[in-house]
Length: 99
Image (cartoon, rainbow, N blue to C red; front, side):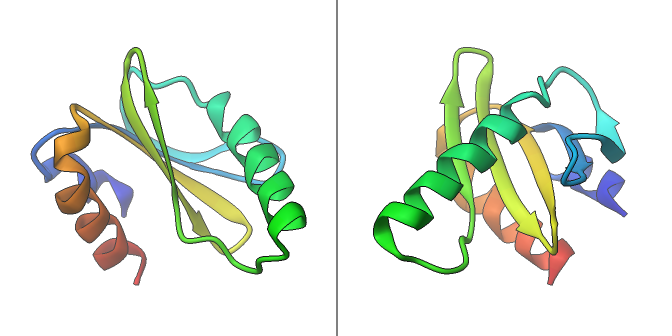
């Protein structure tokens, strides 16, 4: 299923991560999945501070390239791609796949 995302120009790596931080499935290579647990902690803190419910996605612009974290049930889809300028195309592809 997530292998399809590698066909989108700019996407280098995708991984579906379970609540414990384990990889459910992945395709491509080169992304550090440890950012998912840190991202979950940031989201939890922000939700508590702001009193907000669900989150849509979190963009991390890291030295190795941007990473988009998108919730999917209790799992998180990590999408690593080439540049922030591609974000609209990446978001569209991720939402189409998960929708």
